[in-house]
Each structure stands twice: as C-alpha cells, then as structure tokens.
Image 1 (cartoon, rainbow, N blue to C red):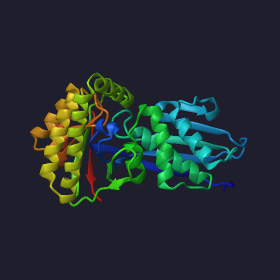
Image 2 (cartoon, rainbow, N blue to C red):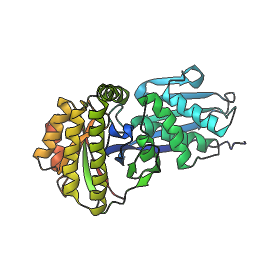
Image 3 (spheres, rainbow, N blue to C red):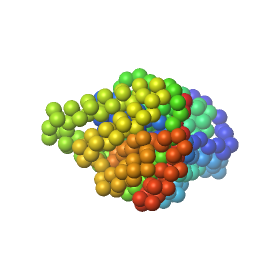
Image 4 (cartoon, rainbow, N blue to C red):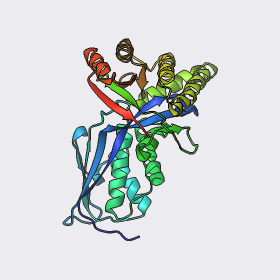
Length: 319
C-alpha cells in the first residue's frame, strides 16, 4: 500500500456525555449518549522529513508525555492509537512525523477524554498517511484503545464520539441514532474529583458477582429507563426525560457509584428547577448532568458553581 506525504494537518473529536445507562450498558442494556462539542481533543501531525522512516515523536502536554513512540510501552493509549492505525493500514515504515495531542476534555471525568483523543489521533494519522478511514473503522480502532482505559469497555464512548451524533447503544448491536424532536440544554458540572472508569466498572462487576440476580434486576431497570428516555426525546417530552434522569440516578446510587460530591451537585441543580439531574459516566467523581427547562440553563450553572462545581459546561443537544 502506498502513502502520500502530506503537510501538517490536524483532526479533532468532541467529548461525550452519557444521558442514561452507564454501567448497565456493560451488561447488555441500552444506553443513550450525546456528543459534547464544547470540549474537544485535537491531534496535530507535522512531517519530520529529516528523521528516518518509522520515527514518530509524540507530545501531549496535559499528560506530560514527550517521547519517541519506540520508547513507549504497549500499554500507553496514545502510542496504541498510533500503532493500531499504522498496523490497520499495513504500512510497515511510515514517513517520520511528530504528533502533538491537546485536549480541553477533563481526564477521568466521564466526558470521554480517552476515546476522543484516540479518535482524533486515528483520523489524523490515517489522513497523514493518505488513507483516511471510514467511521466504522475509526470507531473499531478506538474501541481497542478503550480496553487500555476501561478494561471491559461498553463501546459507547468511541461510538458517539466517532459519529458525533446522539446514539441509542446496545453492546454488539447495530448503532441506532436518535431523532431529537425538540432540542434541549444540558448543564454539565464537574466535581473536580476524578476516578478512572476502569475502577468503578471493576467494583460494579464485583457487586454483580456477589448477587447476580439482584444486580441484573437493577441493570434491567436502568435499561427500561433508557428505552423510555429515547421515546421521551423523540416525542420532545422534556418533563418525562427529567423524571427518568432522577430515577436513573437513584439506581446508580444503589450501584455505589455516586458520591457525596455528585449527590450535592445533583440536588443543587434540582433545587433551582432542573427538570432532572444525575451523575454521568463512571461515577465516584467526574460529572453530573442537569436537564434545563427553557431559559434556565444559566441559573442552573450559577447554582452549581455556588455548590462547589470545579467547572460547568452548557451544551445544546440537537439532531
């Protein structure tokens, strides 16, 4: 396979928020996720014609990475994304290049930082080598890297980020996009504390192993909320959507993945009129999401900042 030597180029990918179904999605239940375009990961490639073929230097300021790919272990997710792309393209000695990765997505905060970085890298590297990959292959390669981040990932992060659309996702089933009848505002608040998703997924796995019947029932209930939420979104029924968010949060509390910080922000949002609020992502830190009634997003933002949120994002969900 030939390659085309190209000038510096970049690719980017959005963050994501899970509306419904976190943790239960790992056990075959449906989940809903939406892209969050207010935060972004970016991969910038610059040719290094003076360096020998196959030489790749990677910098990622947010994680203090500054190294040649040859010196990075197989477990390094950024290196894995590069290597996986090159292997997928069957290019044994690609032209030398420098890769710089930047991101405004909080790490380990439930907004899909790892998947967004992978998607941006895969798109940048494949384009640089003259063979931009289709979305399905980008998502599949990013999923392999997700295993380094999450152990047993569901696949939802790489899917919603690659396709940049709201998705109704069931593991190992065809992707379904969601028709959004009426756009709505989500207010996303960061606790300022992070817990790797791999840890919370493993802890939930141990809970499930301790009593499969009990926790299968919890997962099934969460799955029913996801299905009902899809109907509410497609009907434009924001009040019903908010109520389902509140119920989903209660079940996530039963899975012991909430925390005092998360619960405090959830209550703060509800107290100023959020239609619903819940944790989003792996939990025990990271973010909560609140569904704002029309014109109320800024008021909810102010309340969340007053309650101690480390950062607040407002994003509009639309088709």
